[in-house]
Structure formats: C-alpha cells, structure tokens
Image 1: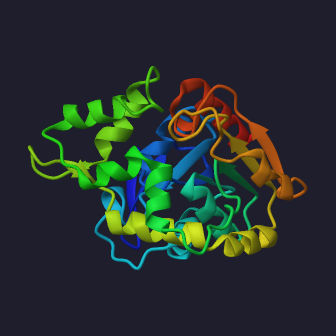
Image 2: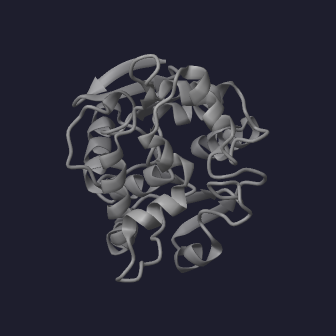
Image 3: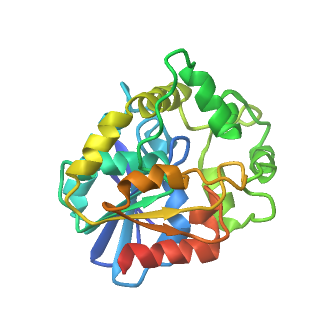
Length: 276
C-alpha cells in the first residue's frame, strides 16, 4: 500500500497495475474498507481509496461536509489518478453518483448504496432516524476505549461481524483508532457523520438527478442482509425498481452490508465485477 495526499486527503494505492479504480468508503468508515477487495484484483489493476474528510487520517480536514463536498474531493483524486472505474460503498456509493454525474468514467459500480432513499415525513428527527438506522456505527463515535483490544472486541460483538471476523476486519477496525492509551476513540468526526447523514436523508432529489446525468454504465451490487445482519437488505427491491432500466442490479449471496467488502468470497466477487 502506497500512501499519497491529494488536497490534504489521505490516499492509499493498493497494487501497481496501470488500470485504476477509485473507491469511496461509507459514512463512518475509512479507506481500509477496500483492502480485501483490492487484494483480489488482477495484477494489471490497482485500487485507489481515500479517507474522506472527517474520517481516518483525513479527520482534521475542515468542513462544511455534505456529499457534494466529498464528491469534489473524489473528483480531485480522480484527476490525479485517471481511473477507468469509480466505485463506492454505502454512503460512498451516493458520493460516487454525484462525482460520476460531473466526470466521465468507464464504469460506475455502486456497492450497497447509491439509489435515492424514500423521503422522511416532515416531522421526522433526521438525527434520530440516522442513529436508529446505523446503530452501533454511530454509537461508537461518542465512546472511548481503554485499549485497542477493547475496540476490536466492540466490533466483534457487532451483529454484522459475528462469526465472520478475519484479518481484513481487524485491520479495518484498528486503522480507525486515535487518541491516547486509555481514551482511544474512532477517527470519524461525529459532526461530519451527522452533516453527511442529514444531507443523505433529505436530498433524495439531488441523488436522483445525478443518477440521470451519469453517462457511464452503472452496476449495483447488493447485500441480502442489512447493517445489523438482519434479513432485510439495506437497498430493498422497492428502491431498485424505478431504476431497473438504468442500473444493472446483482444480489451478492450470503453477505451483509459490511461483509460484502470484507468476507473473502464476497470481496472476490466485488473485485471481479469492478474489473470485468
């Protein structure tokens, strides 16, 4: 993994192949979400992933946040690396849609995200909805941990990781830690997560408009189980149906919202679809 910086963003390049993918992570994640996929790419491909501002080693970059700001950051990385393929997972898939509406890519691959979410009722508390949806992913942002082992144990108890822990998951989790021993915490900045979540849940029309403007072929890879490993997918059929003529949809068997990138078999399938 080679480390770079683009406009202050931490950027990592996995592999040395000349054909390049730019990959965008989810709302509380980091560039390490893509390590397992990157390792399974053909030798002539490489994957470039960044820590979005407010996350990972880009945590100190200033706001305002919001998905259009992240899309501009992604476009700056794309300008540096000239990728053939753009991909994003979860919130990163929505960011990828906004970026692909502004720049031509050979292919766009959305991983368990990227299609407009249903509008919330006017009286809804957006922060409360986000906390209910994301569960432990948001809860951990206000917690501190005695040591690295305690943080790893927190994730091992997460329903999405139960029974599926591996070295890629451990690397993903430990990369996220910052702070002194005895008071370690997630690198994700809570205000960044909240601003992005508010934008995502209230600007469905902007995502729909961007989808219409994307000129590249779009593939959607979905997990059949959700963020808490529940049997309902994060991207249900009802969201896919209106876009069936625009998006090639594929369900990735036997994974959830997280393990679609971290489980060896699922990561291999994602790598294959990115480069096919």
